[in-house]
Length: 218
Image (tube, rainbow, N blue to C red; front, side):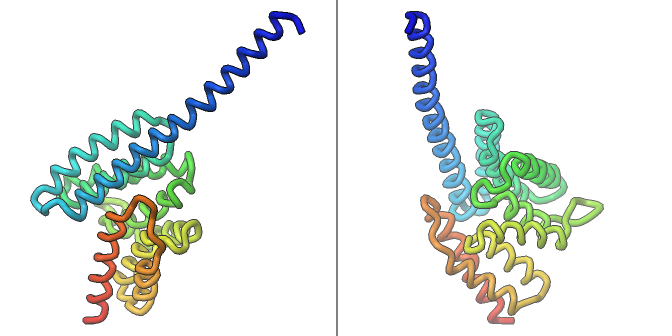
């Protein structure tokens, strides 16, 4: 083989090896940053005192935006930025929260266009919870029918997941369908643990137990 041809093959081989090293490293970094957002959210949502939650989510929202910008073209950071913004809006309250809710929806729709199955279908779980909980027209886009469609999609992707079953149960409870709601709360309670999400799972299970107690009281 001519020397220049050998050199070309070696350059291609080296480039391939370098790419194989860079891609996993990038993926690992993304996973680490997503994990930090997940733990930050669980801490702010379940552990931080009520009066400090808004400030905690303000800081977390800035971090989430930075991570989304760092990993442009990935669905996972957009999903978590949306989740953080939705929680920030919840604890901020008032008309000022509406822009954050609408931004959260737009981020989730952008993530859906990239990878609708990312994070076990969390795009649809999060869209379903937003459409179920936010005000309807003319203030916002709340729509229980649309919420159900999104949560059905979430359950198709992740039928045993704690979050899609929990939010589906919440929707049914809000509609006064106590028996159906109880079924989905119990499915959520029986969900398998999520690796690296013990803090969020513990907080969610406490919410489920409280919801089941409310149903028992009638």
